[in-house]
Image 1: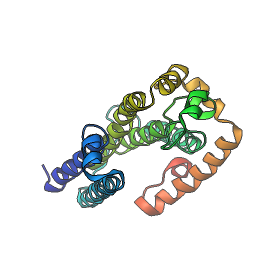
Image 2 (image 1 turned 90 degrees about the vertical axis):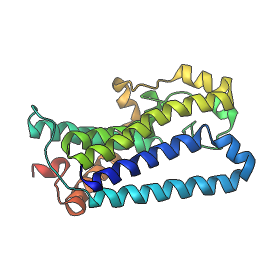
Image 3 (image 1 turned 180 degrees about the vertical axis):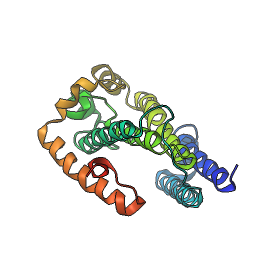
Length: 227
């Protein structure tokens, strides 16, 4: 195997593993030993260092090309393009009224109702990131893209599951009741609950981002592939 791909696998493992270990089994003992703020500094340092390593290893890896075998390339691009648009809707919608945000009062969580993108899933941010990863696995299918996107996919989906467990332990009934009212797995039929303004904003930003993809990666993405 190409040494740069070995480095990318190691960096991706460090990035995802560091998040999991520091967010869950090591968090409590490290907070007790270091204090809350020093722990957050350590967490940020590990996350930033492993992210930089992952980015550098990705850039040093062979580009490759392809797409999933047996499926028409243009079909994959169309599916991936749609996934990235939905990903933006979920991501941007998650910044408003998100019960999972740090420092959210318990009373607010207990009273929360699944509206907007939260009618789709209680983890719209993580599912938005996951859809981005899936889209890049579909259209890229080079070794380096698959490794990077898979790491992000694992972090998003397993991380959100672990977050549910941690929130339930910390917040008790407030989070458990929020879980009962919402869904981890996306209910795609509820996407219209996001509202027309959010869809329009996301569409505009999607057009800008996919156009920028031409200059950032040298590959036309979204509708620009066919224009």
